[in-house]
Image (cartoon, rainbow, N blue to C red; front, side):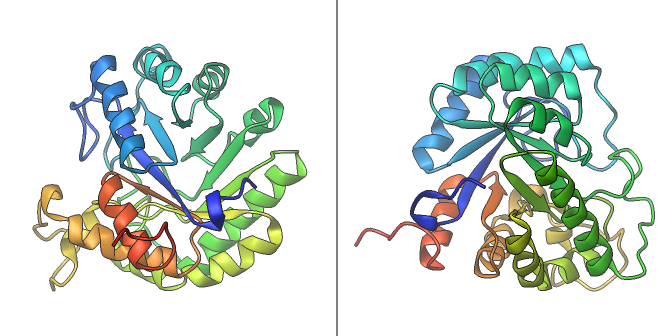
Length: 275
């Protein structure tokens, strides 16, 4: 697994070139604007830019391969000269094309693209998801969410590493087929996942940024209660990112790069803050 600079955690900036992602959907459909945003995140301190052309928000409809390629390829090609690029996709053909264009990490919500990563010698993120984006939030249930999620991602990591994938990250999939309670329990047990992933040879990636469960924090009531809007979830995002970093996460996936870089520094897991 590639070591972060100075052994600090990596900051992955989210760049969705989609019309329907839950936070930045529709903002960066123009490749010129998307590339400019990617470069802005690099200037803010992002170590990677994660380019995605298909929304994975709850209830999202699938996008066909040709359309996803049309959205992501110009952006990957342009940014790969400036920063490390990951491609957020579950489609083998999109992953292969993005790697050919310069992407070096496949961020895979399906947990199935390790053969692509092995064949092309690039990194791979094994994320846990129950169901698909279209149906994953329809009454997700677990006997033991920590044991089931940790077991699944660690097994995937072992398989990928045995196949020759040079860099593997495990992601518990916060918000992907989990209730708010499931998400909080998984965050509470992140240190256990980090302790188990290290000996396997994998790092831990966590993505909580602006997700819907954060809009319920501090509010009693049913799962379907009214949420604070996504624009008002920065504080909760930073709190959960800081927690993840103190619990051993080696990479965090965020929309708010500059604020996260500062939070990481103040938590003692980033570059020193200038006086």
